[in-house]
Image 1 (cartoon, helix red, strand yellow):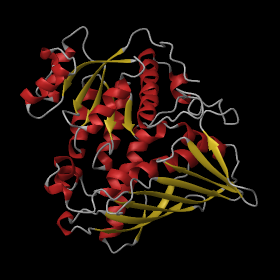
Image 2 (cartoon, helix red, strand yellow; image 1 turned 90 degrees about the horizontal axis):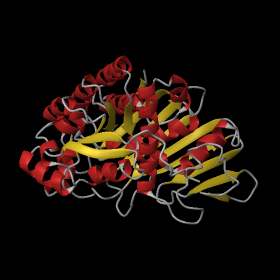
Image 3 (cartoon, helix red, strand yellow; image 1 turned 90 degrees about the vertical axis):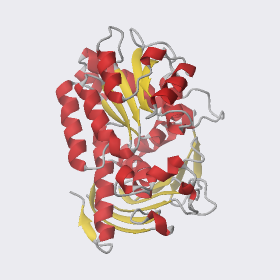
Length: 391
C-alpha cells in the first residue's frame, strides 16, 4: 500500500507559471502537488492579465505579494526571499515552454513542464544540458503514467511474461473536437494555432501520451516512421485533427498510432496494446484499474489493481491509495507522479546519485523523444507520407 508518512525534512516550496482560473490542467497540477503534503504552493504567475492572476491566486490562498504579473518577476522576486520557491510547474501554451523552463533552470529551480517539453528538438536538448549543469530535476508531465497497471505492464514485459515484443498498437482518439469548437473555446483555439502549439495539433496534444507510455512499458526505441495526417476541419490547416503513424522499432518490432480529435462519439480511446510472442497486454485509460492479459490458448485474464498476484515489489505497481476494488483515477495518477518528483528533487538536493539512477519519473529524455516523434511525423506527412529516419 501507499505510504502516507512524510518522507522529507520539509515540504518543497513550489510555484506555478500558467494554470489560471478555468484551467483544468492548472487544477490538476495543484491538486496533485499538494495531495501528499510534499509540496507547498506559495507563489505563482497564473495569468497574462496580472490583476486577474492576482485575484485568482489570493482566492487559492496565496499572499497577494506573491501573485506575480509574469514568470520573470516571479523568478527574480522569489530568488530574493529566504523562503522563495524551490520548484516550479509550467502549465502554459507549448511555444512558451522553452523560454520559461530555461529561465527557471537558470534561476536554480527544479522544473516540472507540461508536454511537449519544447517545439524544437534542439531546444529540448539544450534544456537537458542546462538541467545537468545546474544539477536540477527537469520533468515532463505525462500524467497517465502514474497509474499502477501501466507499471504492472512494464514489469511483465521486463520479466518476459509475454516474450519478445512484436507489435505495439497505440491510440488516443477522442471526438470532442469533431466540430469547430475553437471558435468559442480559448483553450482549444491556441492548440490549433501553429504559432502557439507548434507544427502539430493532435499528434502533439494526445498522440504523445500513448507513445511515451509504450516506450516506458517496452523500452523499445523507434528506428523510422511514416505518418499521414489530415485536417477534417479545414480551418485547422496546416495542423492535423487526425493522424495515423506507422513505426519500425529497433530489433524488428512494428507499431501503429491513431491520434484523433474527430472520432465522433469517443470519450478517449486511449489504449496501448503490446503484442508479444507468447501473450499480449492491453491498457485502456477509461478502465485504468485493469490490465488485460491474453495468453495464447488460454482464457483472457483481467488483472486488477491492488491485488497480491501483481508485481508489487515495484513501487509503481504497489502505489495503492485504496485497496483493490476501489476505483482510483486521474488525480491519483498525477499525485503518484508528483510524489515521485518530490523524492527526485530531494535526491538532487542531497546529491544522491545512486537513488536517482534507480528512481523512475517522466524526465526530459521522454520529453525529447516526444518532440522528436512529433517533428518526424510532420516531416513524413508533409512529404507525402514517406518513411523517415527517426534520428
